[in-house]
Every structure is written in C-alpha cells, then in structure tokens.
Image 1 (tube, rainbow, N blue to C red):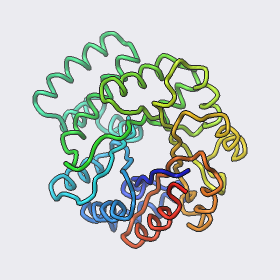
Image 2 (tube, rainbow, N blue to C red; image 1 turned 180 degrees about the horizontal axis):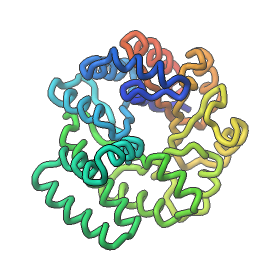
Image 3 (cartoon, rainbow, N blue to C red; image 1 turned 135 degrees about the vertical axis):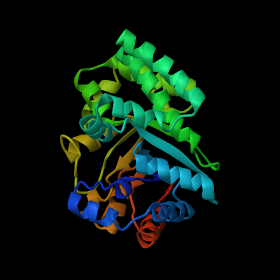
Image 4 (cartoon, rainbow, N blue to C red; image 1 turned 30 degrees about the vertical axis):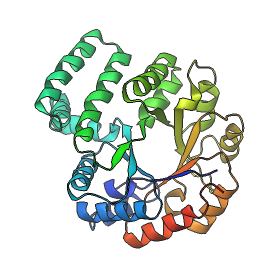
Length: 297
C-alpha cells in the first residue's frame, strides 16, 4: 500500500539509467531556481519528501529553498555517501580535495569537531567508527541549509556501501549504522540496494529492529534493475512485514508509461513508497497527481 511519494534527484544531477546523454542534455537547461520550482510543485501535489544524494547541486537546492521558503512541509532523506562524486574529486584533486569539499559546508565549530572525530576514527582504522564519523560530518553541512519547514525523514546508506557490505556479510557495519542513525538522530535507518532478494535474506538473520529500517530498491513493471529477477524480488516481498520498502526507478528510467507504472503498484501492496524524479513543472504535475490517486488505497 503506497503511503508516501518521494521526489528523486536523478534529473537534477544528470543521472539516467536509460540514456546518460539525454540526462546530461536535459540538465543543461535546468538552473537551481528551476529545480526548486519543480520540487515545490511536486510537494504541492502530494509528494511528502525529497530523497537525494549528497551532491553539490543538492546542497545549493536546499540552500535556496531555505532562503526563499516553501509553503509545504516535507522530509529530507539523504543518501550517503555520494560515492561517484568523491571518486571523481579524488581523481582530480586527491584525498585533500575530498576533505576540502566536505569541510567547506561546515561551521567553524563543526570543523573543529569533525577534525577531532574524523581524526580519531582514522587513527583507529575501524570501519564502523569511520562510517559514523562520515555520516555526522557529511550530514552536518546539509543540516546547516535545511529549509525551515523540513525535517529529517530517513538517512540512507548508499548502495555502493550497502551492497559491498552485503557481499562480505558485514553484520557489524549494518547494525552500527542502524543504531547510530536511530540513537543520534531519532529516525529510521535506510539502505539502498540493487540486490533486494539477497538483502532481505541476509537482514532476517541480523539482530536489528526491522521496523526501524527502510529499504530503497528498484521495483517496476518492466523488472528493470531488479536483481536477480523481477519474480525473485516480488517473492522476497512476501517474506517481510516489518520493513518499509521504497521503490526507486518506478518508471524504469522512462522506459515505462506512467499508466503502466501505476497499474503495477496497485498490484504490489507491500511497497510502501515510491521515489520518482521529475524535471519540469508539467512532468511533476502529471506524475504526482496520478501517483497521489493510488495513495493508501
């Protein structure tokens, strides 16, 4: 049963799983003000939150939203770390460049705290402590520009980390992330995965409060990016009751018509939310008006 509609950020950062050239071309026509207008439009039509990678563009979007204000209340659902971006910065500017990028968004007091916290974590070479430090440091900058009418809804662990940890069965890392997010920020911990069936199988063996967790993973009528298959992912849904499941790529990167996507989600009752990206006011109005029609049916 769909209960929430989230605005995705792919259109704003030039990402498409169907055509990167098309995504980059479309991005060139969008300014930060255009992106803010699209988000505001989607919020007015029933979207309840914004889920986004910690990409510099999203920092600028939130900063503008804080300055100009918005009539709608909504949740912020960051996906961390922005792995692709930090790989690019490391290639261009080295590890010092990554540190400079992160620190540029912090207040003076937060910078001092981050240096101590991050330094101690690095000295210990403990991946769990390093992950906690990273979450706090990265999130701090975005909280500084958080719009007044928004609140944290969920903090998601990026698929690069969650799926790698799944491969190595790093139970301690998953538990530590979930506990840290819940204990420090008082919200649910989220995990993005492209291996939903395996993820469910592994998570059911962990000593984690599953009703305090959210999984975001591809679900769509075409079976696009549903690994290992559409059928196995749908079967995995029947084995869980506690976790919230957010479907990303509901339109299969534009391969599906909106009507096809809507029919599919009417038939998959255990999907509790959808994250969908839009790039124009017209696209936002059409998409969120129609998705809103099947909320809580």
